[in-house]
Amino acid sequence: MLSNEGKRPFQMPFGIALEGQRFGCVVDRFSESYTFQRVEGIPYDYACRVFASRERIYPLFAALGALVNQPCTAFLADYSTPDLDLYASDVIAKEEALDSFTRHSFQLVNDGFTHFWIESEDLEIGVERDKNLEIFGKSLTQVLEVLKGYGIPKEPKRSLFGDAPHNYVKISELFEDRKTMKMCEPLPGEEVEKYESDPKAYKGFFQEIVEGLRMKLEEDE
Image (cartoon, rainbow, N blue to C red):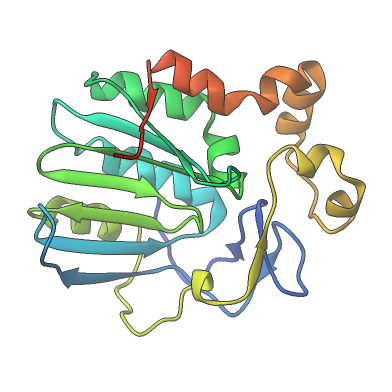
């Protein structure tokens, strides 16, 4: 498990930028933290919101997702559509959902229009559009142990960047839109190679997950 000794550079996701700043840049005004509170009116008793540097978002999601009990359901939300398209899987094995998400972890974390999560009767783990981790559970004891292992402190008064003015871009714009590319920090070479080898497949990650997990579009009632 990763540790967080001392203050580490806080990297923004590539799909989000604070006003006047570059996509994927390091910001000094933020550091990793989490909030914790009791909640009412939903099937869970506690809520936790985690604010993590870009490179730690998915490892945290995977570590916390391993705590979800069977059976579980996987969800994907697409904010680029007018009415917000929400997809849900049939009840599937947790490992199948995590494997599918892991294969596309860079796109999921760095697409500014994507929200993904898994949930069971006792626990829900997700990465929402602003790329904060949102956790709901009947008990979060194990969750807090994971956060402790990652060295993430509880700071309930910290303002999260989702509360500040910011802009979103889709993953495709990071590779294809010249204006966005000029305002973006260098992308990892591995991801550039993946995109250049098959741009259509790279940009189609969302649909690949939907099909692989046999997800269905949730219709408004």
